[in-house]
Length: 227
Ligand code: ADP
Ligand code: ADP
Image (cartoon, rainbow, N blue to C red; front, side, top):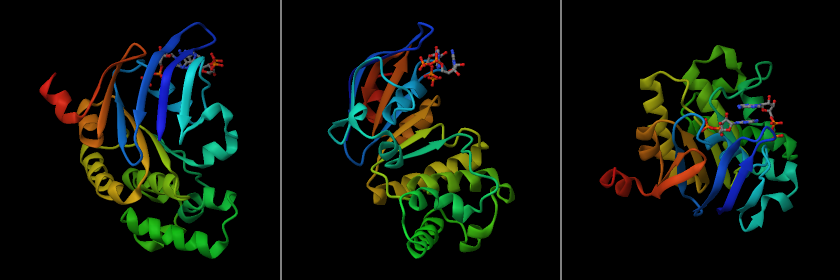
């Protein structure tokens, strides 16, 4: 589903953030990218939806190079969840979740049904739809962020420290909930974290990054047995 072939990113100031990385993520699988701050995780992730352009190498999604895709079309087909999710505060939860479907021209009934379905999935009561983000707890907001990213049934989800800003207990709850729903979603996920425990828990495959390179890429079981 996602393939990196010898991808490098050199920023305009000369920083080599990503240095010749290659990997594949199979459909429906979760790859976690883990490593210390500054090792190139976010750069890697943002090249997938072309928020950052590659300097060298090729990234393809579903067999097509991201550089050959229409940018808007590509970004709408990829769910994106970040730490401080940036929900729109002046919009209700329902409007936030329905944002991409609305842009895609879904009719109101279809959007409403999808919002209700997603609220159930993320275990929030249906009334939440009419609330505003600032009326919710951090954990609830992050759930809404996940729901918004899933709204238009993306094939790919990019999650950058999605639970990073939460207290440890809420964080663990959200990890568990997300693992529970993940199997039904049939979505291919790249999940960025600096926390090795979270990487091992959430990933089918874990790619360990250091200084722009992938130094190890294997299943959690294999990584645990070869520290
Ligand atoms: P590009 O090479 O992709 O065009 P730029 O060097 O123009 O990237 O930087 C894009 C943005 O990132 C700018 O707003 C810049 O201020 C910011 N930026 C520059 N250096 C860093 C850095 N070391 N870490 C994070 N952000 C940075
Ligand atoms: P991570 O997500 O693992 O913390 P990043 O991908 O954000 O790592 O950054 C990788 C390297 O690239 C770091 O050295 C960072 O300072 C640098 N960097 C990130 N963004 C920019 C930018 N826009 N311009 C220049 N350097 C950048």
